[in-house]
Amino acid sequence: MLRYFNDILMGLWSLIIGMGITFREFFKPKVTLLYPHQSVKMPARYRGHVELIPDDEGQPLCVVCGMCEKACPSNCISISGEKPEGSKRKVLTSYILDFTKCSLCGSCVDSCNFGAIRYTKEYNLASTRKEDYHFDLLKRLEESKK
Amino acid sequence: MNEPIVLQPDETFVLNVGPQHPATHGVLRVKMTMDGEYIYDAETVIGYIHRMHEKMAENRPYTQYLPNLSRLDYLSAMAYCHGYVLAVEKAAGIEVPERAEYIRAITVEMNRISSHLVWFGAFVLDLGGFSPLMYAFDDREQILDLLEAVTGSRLTYCYFRFGGVYNDIDDDFIEGTRRFIKRMREALKMYRKLVTTNVILMKRLQGIGPISVDMCQRYGATGPVARGSGINYDVRRNEPYSVYPEFNFDIPVYSECDSYARYNVRMEEMEQSLRIIEQGLDKLPGGPVNPEKKPKTIKLPPGDYYSAVEAGRGSFGIRIVSDGDKSPYRLKLRSPTFSNMHLFDEACRGMLIADALAFMGSLDLVIPEMDR
Image (cartoon, rainbow over all chains, first blue to last red; front, side, top):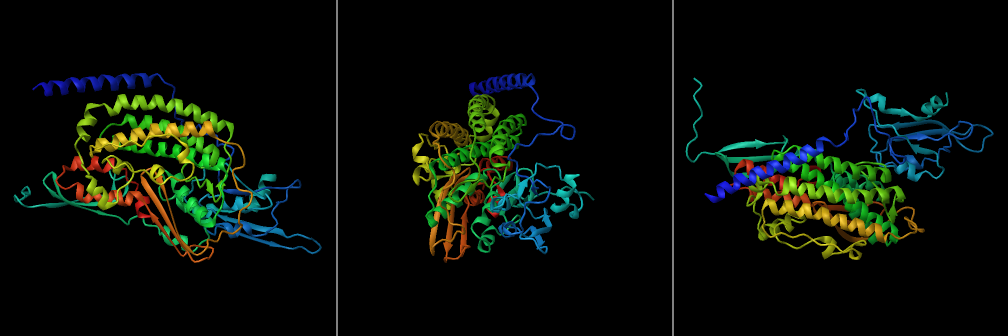
């Protein structure tokens, strides 16, 4: 009998404490954002998908050594290059990133000895079509120049 | 026409929980043979999210397997990566700078808190309390923001490298972490008032889901599940690794064996993790975070290597069998949830279904980790 009333009292006490905490939270500032209208700024080290870094003339720093291609665990990078006549180094002709397979591990950036790729800060990448995730990074670099 | 089904006195029926069910928190299926409201027998079925992580290790170099480790347990990914790099470092004889070891311990403990916060929120949500989930996620957000600024990722960190870490921590991180410790201590006090001493929670958990010491040992349960049953075993203390011997912390052990004991173990573990982080920040030495000399391609000498760490859910072990090649001959992952879950079948017999789901929550199951 005593336990019964004790339980009721304890229950009421828990309720009062709970409501007190809820009441205090009521006056605290909002912590959420209204996403499509507001968005979070990504930190400097955010690992988005990769992009090519241009040199002073706007050409990619990449020398087509293929290290990133080899380092990728999911084989999502395919690059090709050619050696123009009279030139000493190879020139990048295409850099395709298959983002459908990428797990954003950063092995490619780690493996690059020439500092030619970096992470982007993009995260709004929703799409319904698979083709939208086959990024042509060379084209992207040219577009960024404009 | 439309006659109600009347069960015979000794008749049972099968209730299928999952594979898509909010209480299982993942694709776990439980086939429950019910006697009215009571569970007569239960059978957990896994395999819905099997991704061949062990097999994947066999066909790629050691470095390329690093991202996989974060995908095992998405809530405390750091600890799993830690286990793997420790095993490879031990085998390959790579020296780790002291600063890197401290950074590893700090980040792993932060990840442990964030993992326990998700469990806390989801567990109380299972029992019908919604607002603690929101408070817990608010606190967890602080950790994720801090870790994101250092590692570049919010869940699948892939932060540890063989011999060190990917990025050094900066002053912002140290300052932010100190602020977080202060905030979290206040929050833990609030959780204690709001949830731990709440009479409904106590009634739902006390005496529910008893797991005996014997059962823990038979199934190989570790982590908070074993410590809630009075087994004083923590890999950080019993088989020390990394810089854990340098820290002064307690291992919470409760011998009530019920769901409430497991709840209390995790809540106290968060406090202890805060202590470890605080000490780590105080003792943090300077210096590099990656070794000066590191082999370019990692090849382990032929042999059998094992290393275990205390992950958020218990002892995570990794066994690498190497034949001297650049990828392992065999890699075995011993995940804690796999053992912790299997005692559910036996322990839930005779339990009310509502209690069984509360009991399942107290085991803190992460399905991708047991299915691998």
